[in-house]
Image 1 (cartoon, one colour):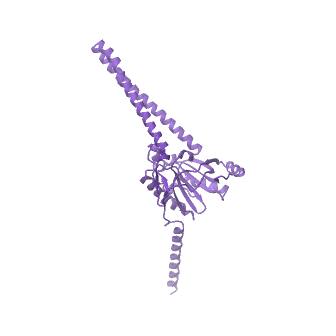
Image 2 (cartoon, rainbow, N blue to C red):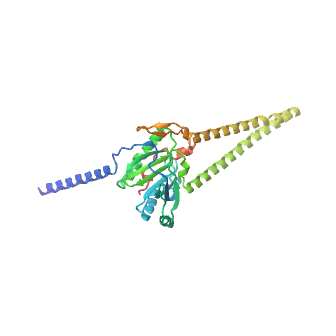
Image 3 (tube, rainbow, N blue to C red):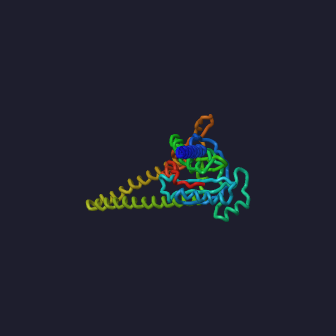
Length: 321
């Protein structure tokens, strides 16, 4: 009889433990409905202290800890610029920090010096005009992992179905909520200086590579033209003279057409970027408008957009706060 009582008590304790774990997971947001919408952002302009890193997103956890150790009362923020599914982990770029002030408030000099002392830099984000956004409860550390695995897929589906250009991914940890914000316009305003410099170098390198390819192609064309001209010379001197006069014109015309196409593409890209304000507002469930943005708007049709969040990051690539 004593053995049965003991086994019964153990079974009860196991059941209670499982119920406790289940309740903890539910409290962390397991069954919370993820609602994605587009419209006005939940935050305004802000000044933040941040550290910028290039590497796996799993390293962000230590940066969150660094910020919290300096001031535990401030809200945390994470800005993720690359999609870890299309960019190798060691090349992912992100900024992690703490929000020093919002709106018209100014950060204190004491706060700024304290963060700068530990290697943080100070930067300000403007208030985004329109964003794709979602929220998730932030009640336990487990909430972060649940949010990463549930919110990012929902954001990706919403953005893909509506063919929007929304990046970078900004996560704001404020009180008991996690705000996921993806700007729909002026995305460059949310690039910290280090990120802007990397983008500038990347564009410069791409331009050099393109010029080198153009030079090689041009050299091949001139070589072919010279070969044809030499062959014509063996037939007759008059034909050689005629050939040397006539042959350059098609090549020149081709370059002119290429220049015209290049200029046309540039104007189209510029029109796409500048036409954001003229786009019709998407009607949301509450009747409010949200901006629609074509795929070639903002960063017009580049693979760069695909690299900047078209798929969700996995939980293992994200550190805990």
